[in-house]
Amino acid sequence: MRLPGLPLVLLAAASAAAEWREVWRDDFAGAELDWTRWAVEENGHGGGNSELQYYRDRPRNVRVENGHLVLEAHREPVNVAGVARDYSSGRIRTKRRADWLHGRFEITAQLPAGKGLWPAFWMLPSEETYGGWAASGEIDIMEFRGGEPDRVHGTLHFGGAWPRNVHRGGSHRLAKGDFTSGMRTFALEWEPGAFRWLVDGVAYHTETSWSSEGGPFPAPFDRRFHLILNLAVGGGFGGPVSHETRFPAQLRVDTVRVLQR
Image 1: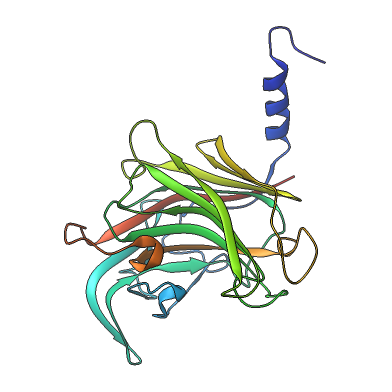
Image 2: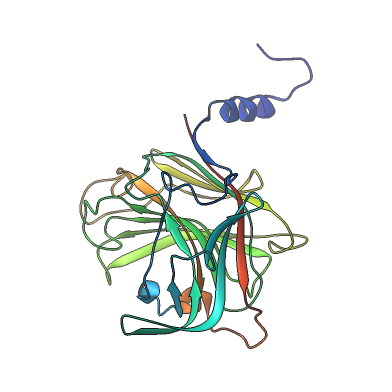
């Protein structure tokens, strides 16, 4: 039944939104990270992108305070097991705790400003069914260059294992303001045969075409993926760190949610 005066397009949008049901959430309301939901990663491998940070498992880099998750990067010498880096930072994931096939994945966060800072909210397959990166896929829900404070990116990685991998995606630029001055909500809707990226509830990019050397469409995105949150420094996407970039730098997260139909 159509309500008088309400356009069909709004009715359709309201109906679609109502179909999503929250299945997982973290508001970071406790005194520390919820270890039943997240694990903290420690490594200085550079993420395959020549990144400059060493991810540490310590409150200086990963903590919960005032209802927010804080991933904090520092300019400081780090030497762990012979791996030397000039920066420390934080990275957490839900692997072996929670993963999903399809859904709406949301983060409400404030992003850090400064050239060379690279916060991301993304997903990797819990099992590499189709082979090593990126044959089994990668889903980038939100990536950000601190030197471009008004633009965010969303990307799929697929195809074959490196160097036969390919990627496809889009970006969104704000008409006014930037992503470093307050909280914004970044989301991805992943359904069979389609990915849609949104900022503050407004869709800005859709992908419906990809491929896999390991299987027919919709492979590799027909398997369960887990969430990752990190603040990288430098690297191929983040770019060089400017002497004007201020440290410590923070990715502050208010809420992470997963919804499914």
